[in-house]
Length: 63
Image (cartoon, rainbow, N blue to C red; front, side):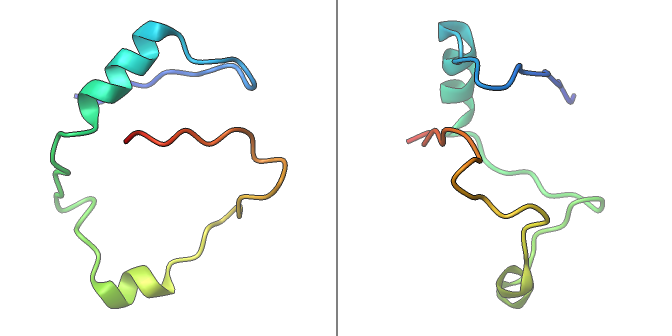
């Protein structure tokens, strides 16, 4: 099941949102035919469509 949320820009996460993200950080990544695991070579060639810059907003490390 995919759950999507639209967050307002520059709005801090609520304690409930942080709790949900923290609960996901230890779950394994599940690859499938629509989203297969990438090889090391594919990962090296990957380029962001919109590179992060100074105005990209806050970055939150999940642990």
